[in-house]
Length: 293
Length: 290
Image: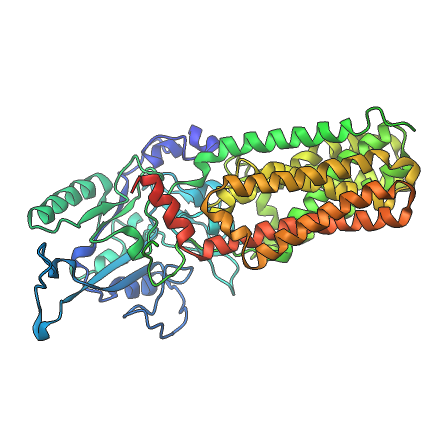
């Protein structure tokens, strides 16, 4: 048992498989989602549903551009966001419009395929009382469906709003990073199906190198707004196993700008609770002191 | 105002049923503090105060377990809660705590009422009194250890709000159900705890930042106001009830209702803060210094 098995992933080192206690393990794997080349085809959503037998979650018209999936949920483990916004580069520094056809400033599409981040310090995993959520040898976070008792604690613990309860089933579900496929040395279904290599799968170290190179390329090409999200091992969740290249602020895509694993404050919380419990006990006893019978 | 994705929430709101979980926060607090009160009453020779406290604790503990099991997506898998012990999971810690506490609370009450096995009853009373305050305060960590802005940002004060609220409920039950001659300590407890609950709740809302708004609006806003009014009225009832059973009973019921409203207010504020992405985005933006 690694010390994080006792004290939680937020104390462990930066390789979650080692700090969970795997003596030998394959390299940590993940996704680099380069949203600059996402074309919004939703092949990832379909491939995920087909491979993982994820049930239908409502066929609704939302009016949110081409997004009728709405967000990640128990029954949507990949979600393609569609954002229509005025193209910022269409207005130059002098305030003149770089006009498209018809004299109107062009709009731009932002499309991004979201997924579970498989955090280095995963709140869902930390708070799960049954051990249903576990860290795999690949460093990913997976729910054991035969253990989960549907307590729902992981749902509000996730700082990204990823994991959710399936109502008619009672248990929670999320992306497994295709744990079954990984075991057979196959890449996850979404990455396999992505026609533009927007979703890239591989060892996390390689992906981080690839992402830095891509970012430098985009900055050199004048796309100053390109930025990486979730790649930094020093962020509030110790970096994601899944990270992104975005073209606007994270919240525009429905992502939290600076998520922090809630259990990083847990020692302080236990301290306050212990103090409150002691105060309650002493307080009750004190009420009996000096009372006339 | 910050940008968001079509105004959609960033985090998921809790899937817990308010009646089950806010109800449990109230009942667990009532039980835990009543066990401490009951034990102190017994030690100081006040059986008329000890019995209703112990009985109330055992009923509230039993109802707590029913609420918790009912809220599970898979109630038949309740015992998976005792599959592992994880200090990183307040729910795991709470499950083990309750599995020690609840049988003790029930045994203490059963022995008191039937007179059977007084030695076991005394031991159970002690165990319940030691575990009870932890049962009353750990639930604050249960809520705070989430990404829910109105809960997490309240973590420094929430355990004190919960402990005070639990003590006020236990005091309320005791003054309503025990003879006037023996209930002086419970009366004192009611007043001190009620004032502490109001003061701690206010302090919490002042210190917690942006999501304090959610305690002033909507369902949570109404419940917060009602909780404060009932708690203050209950404290007044506790004082006026020194010579009046009727005033004591009314004060006790007001304290119990006030404690319950406090828990439901906190629950609903959390849900409201999860629904609106601004409570997640704006403080995080500020933490980045932009």
